[in-house]
Image (tube, rainbow, N blue to C red; front, side):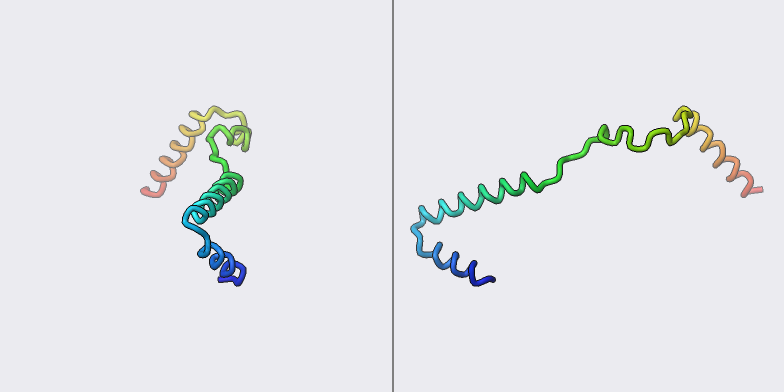
Length: 81
């Protein structure tokens, strides 16, 4: 514990209970304000729109999936043979 913190705590101990509650309220407000500022915003799937355009080179997504499945099936059959 730093000496500054020790001094502050010693001074807080000398305050009345009402004043100590004011200190707690002040610290709580300060921490909440900092937490809001430093917290990362939640991301949405829509934020990813356009991040990697043309991955399929203009190919329809369902056609790509079907082609991939066919290729895997072909590989699987060739490994069994």
